[in-house]
Length: 164
Image (cartoon, rainbow, N blue to C red; front, side, top):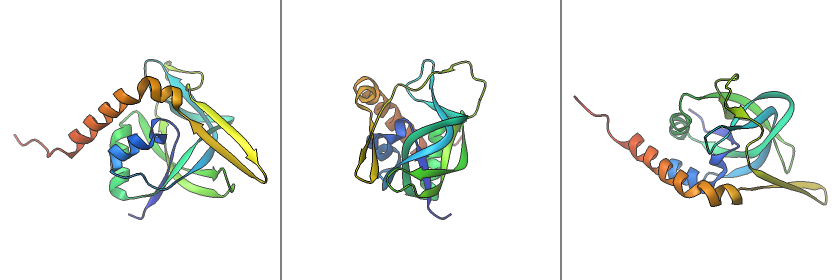
């Protein structure tokens, strides 16, 4: 499989999480996914996205994801998410890219509400638009336990299948 791009919009924006999963931090670029909305999920520290007209989700594109790395991300996102191919726009150049994205599988989930508690600050500079994602509050409250959970997931994924 050729390397691909993956649009991330929640906990996978944190380099520390990606580093645990993939054992590296791939090159990335801020991007926007149009026609989707990022929801909070009751009782969870990560978001979900679903198609919603006239909405958009800001995140970043991880570039050069290998087939093995995509398998790891598929397993990490588990059965609650469906991987889809979408077109995203890079923030700094408006260039369009094809990317995989993980979309919440249950569009009528009653636990989805509002918008994920995630600050996004954007500013215009000369002729280019620069968008920085600020996860300071999320990291303060959740990153330590999330990294422990992620490391446990990765360790379990790498264990040889138990033979009975």
